[in-house]
Length: 428
Image (tube, rainbow, N blue to C red; front, side, top):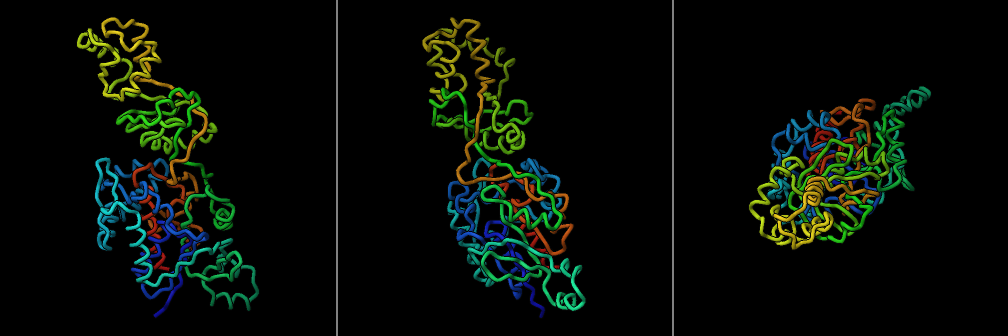
């Protein structure tokens, strides 16, 4: 029985999932995971506040695709082969049940990322997958290419070689029949080595920039409300058509919360191009716009005419935020609704529906850092995750120019791409 050697570069979510899938298909093959640090599955560990947001309860592929600012067309072929339902079934088969929260995020029922990590370690041990830490890959050479410039004797020797030679920092080179590159995003460390691996093969790199971050406000008045959370508000990067609606959080540096973080994904390239300087527009009452709120205000004045504005908040906003908006509109909190001057009313309506905050800079969202950019998808087969330029070279996870909004979508791409790469690495 022929034994092949498969090397997965990267000890994160996509890398582990890929290696395990190869092992399930070919338990007699030699499978190795190379990780340049001494940390394995680090993003799995911190995801969801240490609970691991495994995926999102979105069985409809068409809806699922709408959660990816980049790569949605590419993922269409992928998700019809392996998506949310398959992820849930795989984890259940391997002793991990998931539960769904009201916003659709799915976590292990233990609410601990260690459950996912332990599952992967258990499977790696079961299949005798070699997991090597502090193995830094500095280059990958396709041995068939070497034969093009070699003499006849060398060509004969190369035919006995495996397809790839992996050069390691301070260690002996390693051979492999097939490789999956699953090294994650390219911004956390110097990307030169990763770029070298793929550009030497003719692949193009779409410049990586950050995604999933929060906004630093220039005017710090709003930050006096740090800790105030609004259950439902809409937020837009001025000049960009994308609008996200959901929870917002005011922090000591500016604006955070799920809606803000999702917006950062959609606007990642625009914001990077402007050096993270611009403005966001917040509607604290997203069921209204300025025009419809003006109409509704007539009813407010009739219903609450004799009540003080500071004590009656018809929008269910946090009182601290409501009083802040009143103050910004020049309204004393004991002003009666019926006595509100038209100029102050106009200003308040604008603030409620179009609070504009100048932004300068961003803050990374905890450790759930994601990049947009990476290996250009035009040179990757969406159904196999194999390079169209180099047979036997596959990609998985964030290294490709695919990224999703927050909520488990980036992990779903990791599982899908890892599964597909593994399936077709077995066909070399």
